[in-house]
Length: 102
Image (cartoon, rainbow, N blue to C red; front, top):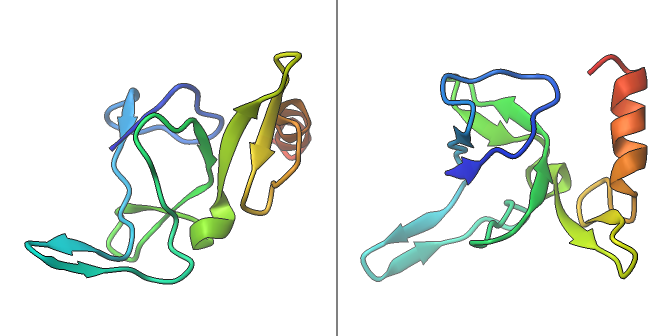
């Protein structure tokens, strides 16, 4: 479950959280991991591009390519790390999405 801090284009039944399905997982002492699957860690601040599985459950679009961690530089600027938006300032992403009507 991801807490939602801001949303640009979609709405969900619970606007403060989102459950996404990620391939892999652990049952008892057996762990399965899929190469390229997005990985979340408690406390991470991320930008995730969300799509849906065939059954309608939310997923990260493009697996790890659709997930970027938000990093704060020394001046307080927000920069994206990882995924297709790697190295992009958050302000540039917001501007590009605004132009695209998202």
